Length: 71
Ligand SMILES: [Zn+2]
Image 1 (cartoon, rainbow, N blue to C red):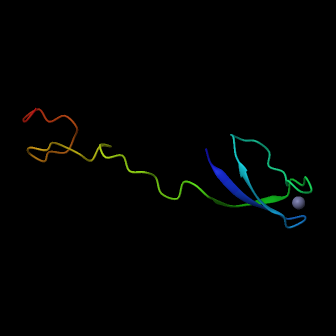
Image 2 (image 1 turned 30 degrees about the vertical axis):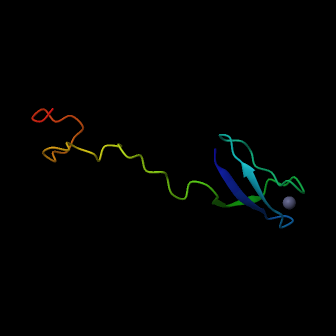
Image 3 (image 1 turned 60 degrees about the vertical axis):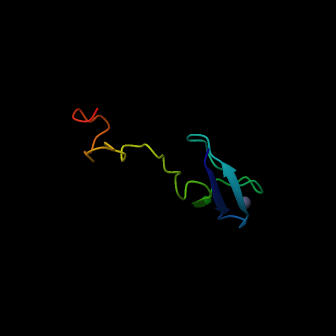
């Protein structure tokens, strides 16, 4: 789940929030809705899945997960 860092335009409070869907973000200090999203803490780089489409056929090097020539 994503954590976003926000800064309140009203009081300058900076805080992090877990964001679920389209939930309204309000300042944890003053309750203002005038907050600015700064950046995501997580999600900078995904973990590469070793077999996500780039493996191909190990025998002939053909792209695609199912190589009919080599099995
Ligand atoms: Zn505030």
